[in-house]
Image (cartoon, rainbow, N blue to C red; front, top):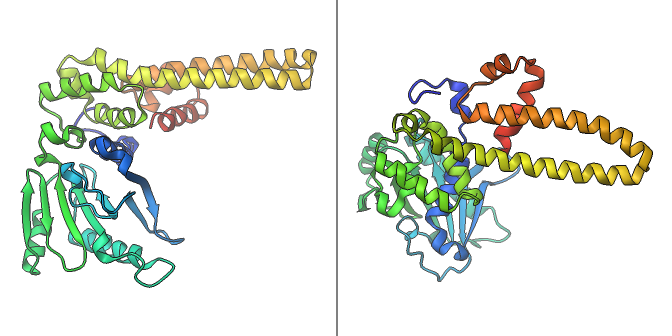
Length: 318
């Protein structure tokens, strides 16, 4: 995988929204006990959903973290991945979602408009949208580096520009990109990650960061650290799955009788052993950036066998 030459298929494999959901929780982790996070909150039975909904457990609790100072009780967050752009229509779409969320309750005005906020998060400054909003009479005030407040009569609105955030205050959201360039920042990410490598939130965001910037990690001679991160994650999943399978196999054997259990156990063990061996080999090749076609060729197996295992590892690695 090369930084600027990824295929569309590879780009889709990068779980940017899942990583963002992990990243915003990391950024707010010091005050997470006061917040409730919901990923892809469904607005109704129709195909409308919010990227992230953050609900303050107490409306009177003031969030101190810079990206959360604007928060009221109900906080809607719209995130755009590095290759996406925050457009004028995106603004109105999410604004409409906020109105729908406010109105979709059991009784009239149950959710007060002043208790709803909207946060737009994007990689680069959306100049066209900002110019349009100013022409429409809305003022845009820079609260601090990377954070802008947009005046509105109905909701509190903020714009978070990841590229402008400081590494001191928002290292993880700033680093959720496919154009990492600063070696010191990359090393700092690795140092912090190593302290939290068993935390699923840190695993989710770091997995996407290293995959999106694999060539830069290699250029900076960080291949060993990169392999450790990816292989550790997959290895943990494999070992957990193997242990679970073994325990389930033992239960089946006991229930169906010792003789039948031994026969089935041997057959299942051989099949499971082959599957685990393939999973291990595929995981190592994924960690090295191999595509599914390359893996099929190198392992000399059919795509029908490799593809389900490859997709399983990617899903479990999220």
